Image (cartoon, rainbow, N blue to C red; front, side, top):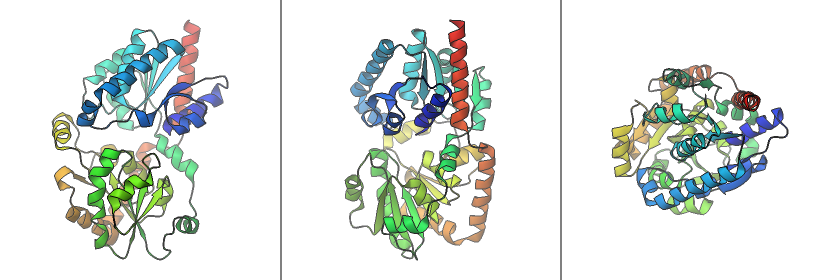
Length: 364
């Protein structure tokens, strides 16, 4: 999504720009020639990566060869550090200019990666205010461009509630609680069953799972069983705009939920080994982007053993029925939005990249 928006903004500034890359349908719709779809490359967690290591290494080798064959003027890396930092190292060695949009979370873990970034990346384009200061402390060329989620929200506008409810066969009278279990098979399998146990505790509400089409409804239905929940596909923003509360797997969705001013409880569960390794390696106090940006526990985080039916029910009850808790979280959401600034991240990032590319060509 963010890469496709960036491509659109670059094309406004350079109508002759051509793009070849690794990504998804949104990038393809913007005219990017896809080498490989992201569905074929997404592995999550230490154990999952280890099991699929041969495929991962094969993808990296394919990407390197394609870069050499294509000979781009500049390489733009977007997030996905396990893959992209290897590509940055290769690209720098081969003399290509590298821009990195949406920083790896090196401030959370694997800080040694900062040294690699300083060596191999020509410009960092970051989306959280605290990241700019972090990189400047290491002497890295960095620009805070704003957060691209604000662009998405501005573009989305306001959904028609009645139309949304009718389209998804939802009731007009009962309020909605959103269940957002993530977009990767492994995380959905681990988190959704516990989320579903909560449904019977709130019969006056209707629970709606926001699923992604890349996994298919059938995948979710196998996990759902006979649970009294609704399932909607690729309508996360409309769902959030019409929800009274949400149960959200840790990730970008925690920030999206907050920006829609929906009270939320954050969930996270990994395999036992992955969790132990992460606990040992991660150096931050929080896992949700909301709490990280605010540097305090705005939203409740239920991690690993704390992710239980009782704990979700307890927090949801506060979010739905405790006026003091509701007011506090909404006040914190207002401050969060102020800290993130205004929309325009994609345009700002495009400006920096196009100016940088112009300078590169002039130097040549």
